[in-house]
Image 1 (tube, rainbow, N blue to C red):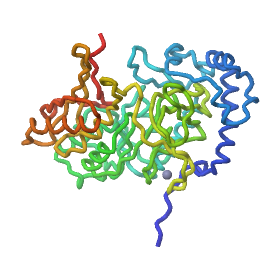
Image 2: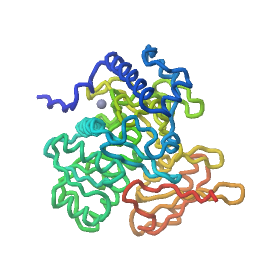
Image 3: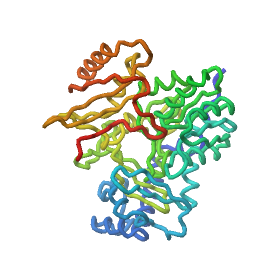
Image 4: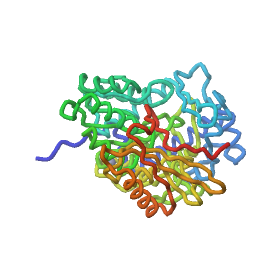
Length: 433
Ligand SMILES: [Zn+2]
């Protein structure tokens, strides 16, 4: 007897790639036409590059001739300068926290919100959410897209949503047990805070019905995934998105967990060399660039995400034809250049969490000591009785061996590394100013 096939939310997810490309081309022309007609700053940039007629776009290869857009375009047009619909047609706004001053505001029409809920229903179905399942949503509700994104997707599927939002970790533990949460949506770092709260409350995996984790909002390494799965006794699925596209729902993992399927009928993905902007072949690591294909309020052409990953278009065991993003390292902005060596915090995370005596709470502190950058990793022992000096020395050797740079390790008291209710602050850079 063979198992019943996993459900697929929308037939478009298994469209033959040739037909998918035809659909993308048609939608690309419509998006370019929309920008030319309704988004003055975007239209000016297109015209300056000689793109004045969407009918002249003959194939998807012509995309490479269109200009990029950047996060700074959103900041320069703050808050509503990139709207491509009258302000009155905006049904909702969200915003991402600005690391440099003002937040990035994004806007949705009613149709954009509907499309987003559909995309989340697709991604959450792909990850294993089913009608009637209890979803404990510990993503922050509000301007952050995580809360309402998972909320709307779960309602669309017909799941039972518990809109806990972030914070009040002790209460999270009680509600998770009492209401029988089966799926947990959170940032990976907050999932670990909840795991700690469960231990503090004496609630073990046997007291829970938890079996599935939906994690996004920040990159996480395979070691972190393993750690979360061990601590919460669930299967952890990765979600990827950014508010400039819609929020979560841009890409997510299927049960094969060999990359995140991109919702390519809504987002045209390219991978480019982050320095030259040249397109890179499938499989090569570079910066992810997205063009929205169905957005009304905020269409964006060739938007530079700053996120690093690679693309895999090989057929997937799950039957979906959608390309997958693999080796997501997180934002290029988060990449540290320490004494000339490129280092992602997720690289350090992977090494640290591969050591059983290390708890999954850490941060990287960058200081300038004279002309040199000094990097210190703060981390905590996983249990009492660990020889901290020996552990610190062992970690320093491990990090040096695998990264090629000297990194100091400070093993601090359990609980000393600040915890986060949303996206964790992994890097403290004291070099500026
Ligand atoms: Zn798949």
